[in-house]
Amino acid sequence: MRPAEESSLERPITTEGQLLVEGRVPEMFFREMVAAYDLENLLEVRTFGDISKDNLQTYLEIFAQKAAFKQKVKRLGIIRDAEGEPAVSAFQSVQAALRGAQLPVPGEMNKMEGAPLGAGIYILPNCQDVGMLEELCLAAATEAEKGQPNGVFPCVDDFFSCLEKRGRNASNPAKSRFAGFALACDVIDPQLGRAAQKGVIPWHTNAFDTLKSFLQKVAGQ
Amino acid sequence: MEPPKNFRISHLSVRPSNPTLDAEKYNQIALEADGEKHFEQIMREVEPRLKRLRYAKLPNTSSPLVFVDLGLSRSVPATQMGQAFNRLLHIYAEILTSKTNVLLIDEIENGIFSESLPLIWKGLFAICEQQNVQIFATTHSRECIMAANLAAEDRKKDELSVQRLQIVNGNIEAVRLGEKHLEMAAEMGLEVRS
Image (cartoon, rainbow over all chains, first blue to last red; front, side, top):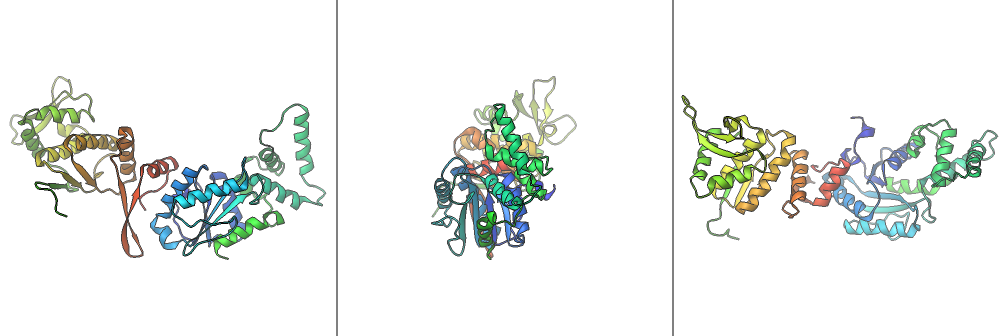
């Protein structure tokens, strides 16, 4: 079985920093992000599956009880989005899961707390607004494209306005717009993770600064 | 704490069972009132075609065997049945003849095709309940743990406790894995053995 297809928990725990994200697509995305920031030797990314407080708590109970976790891990980061609910509600849900799993509970978002094991929570897109990872990526891509004569966003926006005129509205505008952007960059698979693997995400833009700093904290930098 | 009076503990090792010894034990059970009936009833959990079990010796042989009546023209020796059937025959015969309260089974999955494991566990839960026996089984097999959990879920009686032994910083510790952990592990394909 190729590493990318292995289940997350089955990959050995080898770094002091561990990052848990919500689902396979974010897992692929954050692996690329970690590599882009040269944190691969300090931080491993895994998915805890679909978000629900009970799911996350159960996953944390399994994960944190592993011998390798107890012996190796010093910092645990959890990232989820605030899709359809305020960031603070999403944050409280992760706090409850950590508390239920008897792990350190940070009092604020984007902050590592606890010793000898520290835990941190980041709520996408920016620990404040309702939204998701795609919105952050669109902001980064817009920033990267600014001032460039051959940007793709005018084409993407024209495409969606054309559809809207015909009464076809996207049910999830952020995900659709990102898929349109990925397609415009010649990535046929519209999933965020695949786009990240294909190199269309501009990692070194200001839009990612806060998230990058969170990853660095989990990595111990 | 002292165990209760007449409290018995038996064990089964990883060695393959001896069909003749199993047959002798079965014969001992069959001599008791309703012994055959109880044994057959439990074995039917894993082999619904089972009509009768018989202790017999073929002509020109010196060793008795258990024969299984499946409603065919002739009974077949238990040794011709599947591994799950024979493993359970062995375990049940031990439980019923030793009148044990606790049975220790080392590497319970040993020699059993993984697809038979759910049947094995189904049968084990049934006899534990019927005979008021507690089994402590060890395994290295993920399939075995998952099969035990599946069988326990079906029975809805909270009869299974899985403890993983692991070494942390030189010390052995036990970690309890509950039903919800095993369910998630099964759904996500997660490793539960380390």
